[in-house]
Each structure stands twice: as C-alpha cells, then as structure tokens.
Length: 102
Image 1 (cartoon, rainbow, N blue to C red):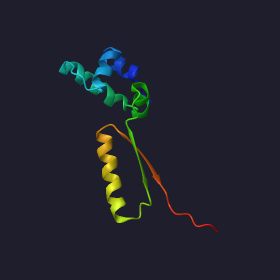
Image 2: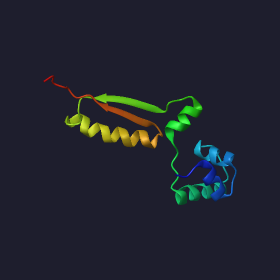
Image 3: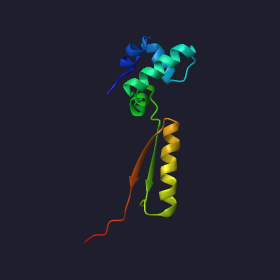
Image 4: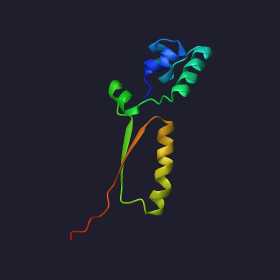
C-alpha cells in the first residue's frame, strides 16, 4: 500500500506539496499533474479515517437501517455511498434486523 511519502518520491516533490494537493490547495498545474500521475501509478488512495484523526474531524457519517430488503433503502443506500465517497466522507452503516428469540 502506497504512502504519501511514496507519492512525493515518485512525483519528485515535497511531502508538503502532496499534502497541499490532497487538501485541495492551489499548486502549479505541472506539479499537480505530476502528483496525480504518481498517485495513479502507485494506486494511492487517501485514507479518510486516518486523515480525519489527524485533523480531529471524523469525516464520517453513520446510518442504521432496518434491512436492505426495503425498496426505498435499497435505492437510497448506493446513492448515499457514491455521493459521500465523492465528498471524501466515510459511510459507516449498520443493518439492524429484528431478531426473534427462539
């Protein structure tokens, strides 16, 4: 699994430049392009939970659903998952099914 240091080495830039890129700060287009290319080559994906711990922000949303057999929940859940992934928010979900005592 690639790290930010690996991306910086591959792109030939500083850790700070990679951090700025990941945090959406402005960089020279050439630098941003090199970082993006290095990330693609290394298959680097930012760990949302780890960066949330560093920033003291969870960047996560939790949901509890009855089951994924309900039509509304089946249609809503994948859309939430995609939307929050784009927004770099981790989706933590729990399926709380009714358990019958035997």
